[in-house]
Image 1 (cartoon, one colour):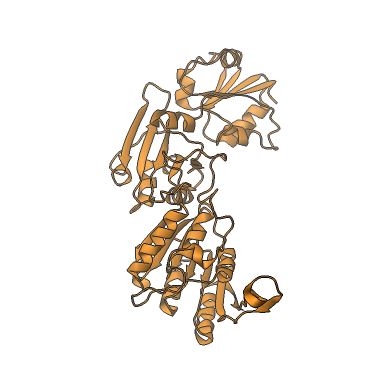
Image 2 (cartoon, helix red, strand yellow):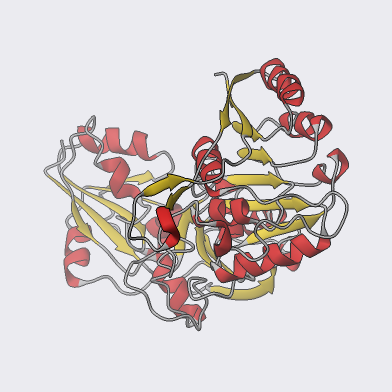
Length: 423
C-alpha cells in the first residue's frame, strides 16, 4: 500500500499550504484530465486519469510512495472517499476538502440550502433524481455524462421548475445559467456541472422555498416538521373528506384505517413515483407525498381536484393533479414505482398493471369485482393478496366521557387487494 494517501478537494482556487505540500511530494497523482493539467503535478510522478475509481484504488494500493487523489470540492460528499474507503482496498486516507460543488452552486445563486435535497444522477439514478425534483421545491442534482441538465428536464416534462445550471465551477470557464425547465433541452451543457432545481406550488411552511422559515434539520423531508404529527390522519384533517363531489365519477374518501394499510402496501419512499387513480380529495395522495415520494393524482371530478390542491398546499407537499378518468388518461404519465386504484373499474386496473409498478393496490367495490381484480393482478405477474377491512368505533357511554365504552355503529367493510412483482 502507498506510504501516504492524500485526497485533495479542489474547487479551482489556489491550493492550501497542506494540499500544496502533499502534491509536491507525490509520486502518484490521480485526477481528472483538466485537474492533472491545471495543477503543479511533479514531473516524475505517475499520473492516473480518475475515470474508474475502483481501478485507480487498486493501483494506489499497489503503489509504494506518496499518492495523491484530486477530486472536485469536498471529496467526502458524494465523492471518491467512499469508494476509496471500501474494505477490499485497505486504504487509509488523509482528506483535505475544499468547498463542495453544491455549496458553491447555492452560493452562486445566493440561496440558503440547509433545507435542500441533494441527489446524485450517477449510476443510472436519473429517474429517481427526477422524482425527487418532482416532490421537493429545492434540489441540487449532481449530474453525470448522459444524465445532465437536458436529460433531467426531459424527465420533468410538464412540471414547471427553474434550473440553475452551474458549469465548471471554480475554473476560468465557470458559467451559471438560469432558465425555466422547458428551455433547458435547447442548450448543450458542459461537464462537470451541478444543477439546482427550484420551484413548485406547495407554498406551505414546509415547502422549503426561499422565504420559508429556517428549520433545525438539514434536508428535512417534505411535510416535516408540521403541525400534524403522524399519518393516516382523521378524515376531517382534509378539505372535502367524505365527499364524493358533485360530478359523475367523483371518488369517495378512504377511511383513515384503510389509508394506513394502503400506505403500508405502497411503501412510498423518496425517489419513488406513486400514482393515485381516482384520488378524490387527495387524502391518500397527500400522505404518500408526505413520505417524500413524487405523486401523480388522477381524478374525474374538477371540484375534487380543486380540494386536492388545497390539501396539498396545507401540508406543504407537491402533488401533480391530472383531471380525467379511464385508461386513456394514463398514457402520458411518467412510469410509476407504486400505484393505487382507488376507483375506476377493471379496465383502469389492467391499464395500471400494464405499466408494471413494483407495488400495486386496488379497492374493488364488490366481492365479484374483487375476484376479477385479484385474478388480473396474479395474471400480470404479481404476488396477489387481499383483505376485507372492517372497523367499529368505540364511544364513551353517555357521551360525557365519564362512563364506560360502547361500540358505535359498525361501518361498511372495505375490500383491499394488493400485489408485488414476483422477482
